[in-house]
Length: 449
Picture (cartoon, rainbow, N blue to C red):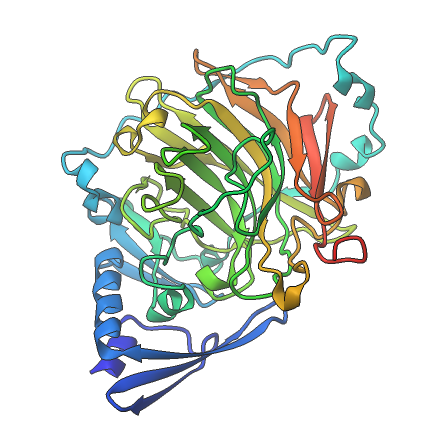
């Protein structure tokens, strides 16, 4: 009965050894996760057959029947699903939604603006890393491509979810969602990434006085170590609108993330997120709920990014662009060299149905204070901003999209890090990288108890 349910969707036994015993009408799962970073975790879960059936029913809804299936070298199963059968279209607000076939109008590039002589960033123009920056930087791709198999035209690649993925979450409701933010405690002068509940940040952000229609940046990719399974480390762009201290915050997010709880390993993965109610009930990561409409057959959201940067070695980065289509109003995502991945339909949003009021770029970690001290989960490369190129992680070429659908370099950004002894950030400017910053840190250290 229950065991059949476990086998039905398949899993990589090499990655997730599983012992199952039937006791008193329940199933005891003994799950051992052996993570690439050396993190080992054993969790004993008692799961009733009723709960297992509920989990399987949910998986049947989000794991759509594939045209073909691709086994990735990292253990992922990629299902090539017909684009009209993808999970997005199950959303009640998208009942009558027709997938956008006409490509959106790409944002126009604006020549780099000259800095005023008294601009604070002008003092950073001659940065010691400028020569190094143009060397040893390469793009990344995704691990499931390595065997040469691609999804057929008319399908989209979707990372298959398993029973194990759901059991790592706190509950079926929490599966695929960011931790809900109750009893928020944040600095009154902070932009709202909805700090609190152990979420810590090192971010750059725009003011709230302008209307914003998108943002872009190139993000350095690393594989930070995670101390405990229910923590994560990510680097992303936030597109925000709504009230930060209420329950109607709209957010669109994309970048890379290491999350053992969500993915079962410690590889950095391309991810997306959205919410319209401050992370309470709406939205989710990737395609784990209805909402994001994928149009690309070569990029799998939630799949591992490879290769990654190394200390004092080659640096790898990814470019993310999110912008509002001026004609149809959908929020599109571009990856790499303006490759269209898909879009968040305008119907999903309230405030973002019009425009954004703030953009944030940077890193976020969850600090659960294991053993009563600050977590050793790393942000970025695990090194502080002052270590510079090849050692600290970076965001470069920060840009925003204006009301006339034009991209322009961001000037006058503000920065925030809740605890600079744990994670910090330093913004700079030069002609090659425009506005950029280094950020990150090791977490727990003698100054960060």
